[in-house]
Length: 203
Image (cartoon, rainbow, N blue to C red; front, side, top):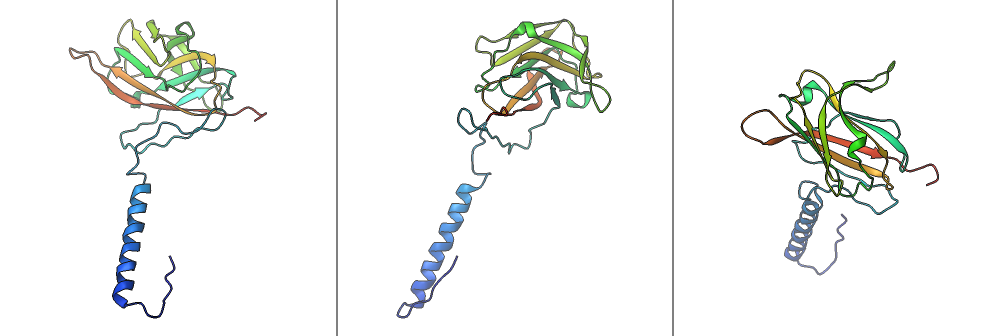
């Protein structure tokens, strides 16, 4: 900020003007601070990249793997839950899907698995299917998984889905909530999978 000095202006007036300028700058900086802004799930328009930021200290990132991240391409999703991601057995697993995730999710193309986590020399894969009832809400924005028996917290498990990626490229946050065995049917937040969908080569 540059201040010019003019003849004939009273020093008190210059001090008052400077004070008003500093207060105005502080007010503008506060308004633009991420801490003052409400968290946004996504910003953008169809066909453009969508962005999201997370300023919640309780946010926990979960590991996932996809066979294809390109928009509108068929892909296999492996939404992983490692032992360190949970402290109790799971009686019910709920997954919230973003409202702007414009892809069809079919319950018949979903399964709960004991997972084999991939690396340099092997692929991530569903090692063993865990018997469970799987339901998808009518609007496709909630997935409910009810294992036949509580799932131990000792193994890496995951939700496998086979679907066509959405039309819009961008970032999509899937949240995982789990209900532990017990008398109180309360689901706790486990973490989130932040899915990245990339534009096609033609865009």
